[in-house]
Image 1 (cartoon, protein in one colour):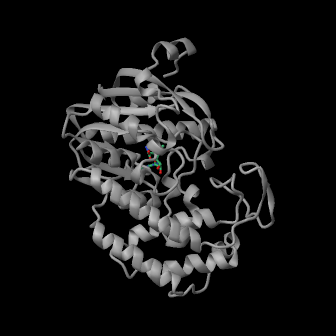
Image 2 (image 1 turned 90 degrees about the vertical axis):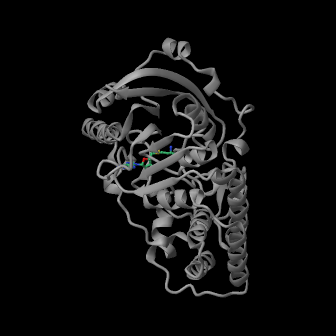
Image 3 (image 1 turned 90 degrees about the horizontal axis):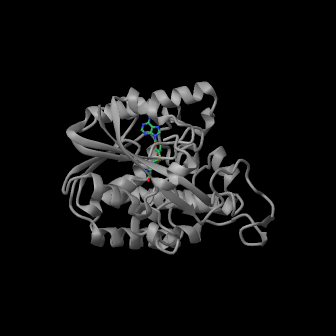
Length: 371
Ligand SMILES: C[S@@+](CC[C@H](N)C(=O)[O-])C[C@H]1O[C@@H](n2cnc3c(N)ncnc32)[C@H](O)[C@@H]1O
């Protein structure tokens, strides 16, 4: 929290500062954590350790910024009940698919059936939207829309919707090195920094649909073997406005950072293809809002509103655990305005080795209780 470099090193928690060799990407993205890309998530091993330190066994935990569902998935693995809230409809769909119980036999039968029908040319693409025409090559567009037309026939339609979104993300007309926030479609071959050769924009989506359907099936089955039967709820909306289903033993969360990521926009293709509700004007700290003085004041207001609601839903001995990179020292004011008192803070070293945003930095874990 506004700490100096020396304090960071003094307070560094080595048990939470894994190296790439300790925790390779394959382990960080085990089972359902890799059902769909999501920029801005924390890793399940961190959440597991925070549960061990701050949540009573068989307790109940809340994540008011639940994102891709890391807290809730880990809660199921750690034998805790959980609830999560997120403003972005796609994130809620993704979490629901990750955390629902799926009958593995029905799931497998349905996913294989939809692939067989798709390979046989069933389904109809209908008329593509302006977005689909612009962002997908003609064949890729037909593949995606034809697959979409088959989905409603199945009990596991939501699983297929996530597969469709993942295939659409890979099939967009963009460069291999700019999958996160492409601004313009890439229509011509280009020099690819990632592969160090000339690459061409994608033309088909059918191979992605097949590969991701089978990968999703394996990942859901794998998670089904390690998860507990604890309850797990997801609420879609603005945490400041919903009635939170407390009381909770703890809150474990990583809030959005000011002006860094647009959580709706990063999955724009999913909103376009699946017709999901767009509530981006309620997103706290969106990149689109920038980091002006007014934007930072709105951020402090927004996060304080969420944490105050969380505090009110906590049991008396409950703790709020916040993972944050507070570069602007906003959290002392946020905690005070939320009616929280800082009890403990430790730092962890993060060394991200993959992707264009690779690099190292420190983040804090703030542990607070009701003041
Ligand atoms: C840093 S991400 C959380 C990522 C999560 N820890 C994970 O591992 O997937 C922050 C999340 O807060 C959500 N969010 C932003 N404003 C919100 C609001 N007013 N109410 C609920 N969620 C909100 C965003 O949609 C985003 O998914």
